[in-house]
Every structure is written in structure tokens, then in C-alpha cells.
Image (tube, rainbow, N blue to C red; front, side, top):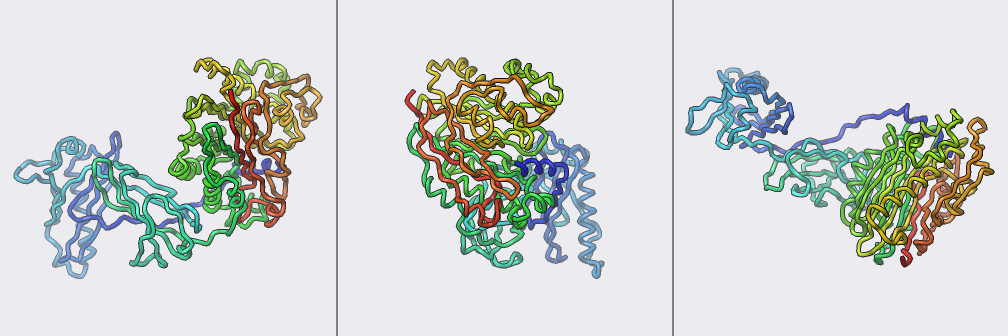
Length: 591
């Protein structure tokens, strides 16, 4: 929890650095001029490759103009640039420089002039028969071809882990229609690359260690149109992985997906957000025992993605999810075969991290999802009025709890091939050591909200049997089993005598007693550690499940004390987070 406190200091002191990656377009053909103008865009992009062996010219020209410019203005710019290139190439043979570099648009068999119209007007007509002529070379006009704007590969690639573009932007095409081929070579400048994989994702092999990877993508669309290739070469060679990771031992308990329609495997995991892990402060103060290269998210994400995939889960609840990691990595890996998840992320206020729920689409149908920022809604939602009225008179307490960006995320899911429903909630509660009272209040408000959502969906969907709905509440609650949250969840009520209410004397809560209606239990019990650093270690993460609706089939054993301490603490080369995942298999009881 001390680590959680100090993490908050990092948000104001982030230092992001840009890296150069090797990316280049394959040699463009010499028959076409490619013109791109997206709807409602103010950019007109023109690209062609001019080759003149006699003049020793082989050059790709790229122009960014405005669609409302007259064609003659754009052609004049092309003429100027081509002339400059020729003059540069022929600086010692200026007598060979053409007297005039003629650039024009023409239509075969027609004397039509296009000089007095804009490019926007030109593109709104049939351009199939219109050509661009540069000196003696004619180019067919290809408008809005599939076009890749950028490909970027990760800076760290580990053997036996998935690699895929960390940046990929394409216009006028789609990935499903496009072709992607992976190559490898010992030297990134080599002309001798050997094919090693197909598709946008590639699992680097042990025999790839020491090789650089190159991804070549041919963009296409569903109409069969093909655009110029773009390739990207990795900045570094494939590295050996860290060896056997503790999560691989745990995955022996989850070798396949569950088969029963009434069984679900649940995972909850705090991933350790990049903004808290990879900074000067975190390296020096939070995780000084962890070599810096193992704190970099390009290293860590390969491990936690491999870990999550290997648990063969049906439902995954995540905390401290960077928005970019969700968009680029989790969505890329978890939504594709064999995982086939659908994911939703809820950001915590203005902080670029939050909580996320993924569910396997072969098992569940999403009925509705909900996101609630607790702080700003506590004073306004009618369902909170009874509890809020008991604490709002303490201005310092009221301000502190309402200023928090804590978010509760809920998905209501229909279990396919079953009459059962799953109500899953996910949160990450406030971290501060003197805030047991804040966390407990947050949990009280959260369970009120969950109860409200459950009643709402029962009514709206006309579900006649309430027992067909089971609740699972996951998260990093920043609360040990000795605290009031565990008592509230497992014993259904808390009274005003709890020490939690007085964790901060100036914000002490008095006269508050809370109960909740759900028969809940902790699927993984109360292990000694789910968070293990040199500053704090303890049980903070839980999979709470409704025990009158589910029976526990198994909970996957946590790593041993020796594994936690092998590299002093976690994260480390083999643990990608300062938390560990919890995994449990549940089975619906007959309704």
C-alpha cells in the first residue's frame, strides 16, 4: 500500500521519450501516381516514383497539398521538385538537363484542359482515363488506394512471446484483407531476409534469438484493391526469454478452457501501469531492486500477455491498465483467436489508466455494461443518499472521498447455452495508508450500486428467477483481510465499532452501520501476499463470488514465498507486476 501511495507522485513527473524505429515503404511501382484524400480531410497526398535510367534518376516523390488548390498550382510544385532533383543528379552534366520539365494532366484522345479546376473537382469526376505526365513518363491515377501510414515494431522482442506492430495505421484498406509476412536476418541492413511467419502476429521462436525481424505488409481492401507495401524492421534482435516463469507453473492448473456451460474461469490481475513503473522515481524509490530493463512495459507486457492467454480464462478483470496497453496490446492479443475476448475499459478520471473487463464471446453475450466514477456521483445519486447523509457533514471527509477518481465497472452477461446470467464488477480502490475509512466507504457505495444494477436488470429484462443471476466482484481493494471490506463482503455487515472508521482522526466516521444482501466468499481465500514489494507486502486482491450461486471448483495456488523472494521482490525478470494474478474456477449452482 505504501507503493500505491508513492505511485501517485509519478503522474505529475512523467518523462516520455521517443524512439526511432526502422520503417520504410517497399519500392513503389513506376506505373501509378497514388492520390489520397479522405472524406472531409483538408489534406491531399500525392505519391509517385519517377525512374529515368538515362538521367540516373530513381526517386519517390511525395506531396501534401490542399484539395481546393487548382491543379495547375499543384503541378507547378511537382515540376519544381522534379527539376531540383534532376539538377542535383546532373550538377556536373547540366548540359543534359532538359530545357523544360513538363508536368501535366491529360486524357487520351481528348484535348480537355484540367488547369482551371481544383483537385477536389477533379477527384469528384471519373479519373480512370486521366493520366499524370512527367517529362516522358505517364502515370495512371489511382485514387484512395489501400495505404499504410505507419508500422512500428516493439523495441524489445522475447523468444516464445508474441510480437506484433505497436503502431499500425492504414487508410482505405482493412487488416483482414491485407497480407503480412515476417522475415528474419542477422543484420538489419541485409538484403538476405528469410521468411519466418505469416499474419500480423508472430510468436518469436528460440531459433530467432539474435535475429532482427522485419514485417512487410501489403495493404488491401475487400474490393481487391492493392496498395504499396510498407515494411518495418525491429530496432533490436530477438532476445532470449527469462526462462521458466512462476506463472507457467501455475498454468499447469489451467491447461485448457473449461468445457461445462455452467463453469467459468475467472482471473483478476493488477498489471502495474506503465506510468507507475518506468520512471526515474519508480526505479530509484519504488522498485530499486528490479533492473530497469524489466520495468519497461515493452518487456513486461510480453510476459503478462503470455500469462493471461495461458490461463484459458472465461472472464478477466484487470486493474492499472494503461489506455495505450488496452488499445494496442490487450485488444490485439485477447480479442483474436484462440482467446476471442471482448473487452471494455473504464478510465479513472483524467489519469491515463483504469480498469478493464474481458469476457470470452463464445461463452457470454453482453447485455449491458456500466461505468461509475464514485467520487463525482456519491453526492448526487439518489441510491447513495442514505449513506451520504451520514458523512457529508464532515467537510474534510466529504471532500476527500469525492475527490477520488475511483471507478466501478460492471458488465451484465448472459451465459450462452444456459439460463444463467453473470453480473461481474471490477474496481481498484483508493490506496493511501491512512484511508481505511475511505476504502470502506467506497466499497459500501460500490455494493449499493451493484445491488441497484442487479435490481434494474432483473426488472428490465423481466427475469423471473433472481437465482439465475450470480455476482462476481473482482479487484485490487487495497485492503487486507483484517480490514472492514473483507468483513463486509464475507459476513454481510459491519458496525460502527470498526477500527477502519477511525484510520484518520480528522475524518473519523461515526454512527455508520452497513449491510449488504449478497452471500459472498473469497475464491482464493486470504493468501499472505498478492502484492509483494520491499515497501509493502500483503493480500490486497480478491475474487469475491456469490457462494449461494456458485460452488468453487478450484483456485490456482499462488507462487511460493521462495519464488517471490528469489529476486528480492516483484516485479522482476519473471514477474511482470508488483501484484500476482488470482485465478478461480466457479460452477453455477442449480437455480
